[in-house]
Length: 116
Image 1 (cartoon, rainbow, N blue to C red):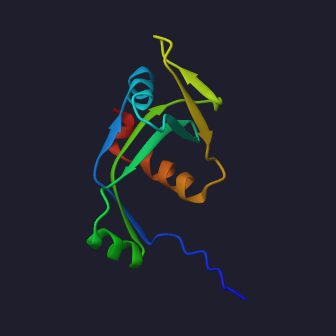
Image 2: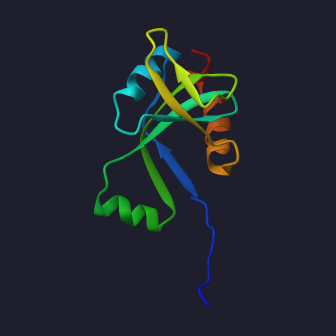
């Protein structure tokens, strides 16, 4: 029988964090093909991985990940969709049960950009 092993990343590097107001985040997300944002603990966000390369694949095998950027906005209560003031609408995926994303948002809230 196949053995399955769950092994979270040891380290995730985040190159850039961008705090946006809700309208700007919705506008940015609605222009992308996959126009869904994630929601965890009062934060609406999206993360973008760096462009795949052989070197990054080796880092993944060493249990490390590199994110190009995380964009986020404070959004206290989860809803299935969110609309901007100009009526752009995007879907929202509730990722509250993801330990990885909960840890990411908890870490993000400790960064200086959170209070800007």
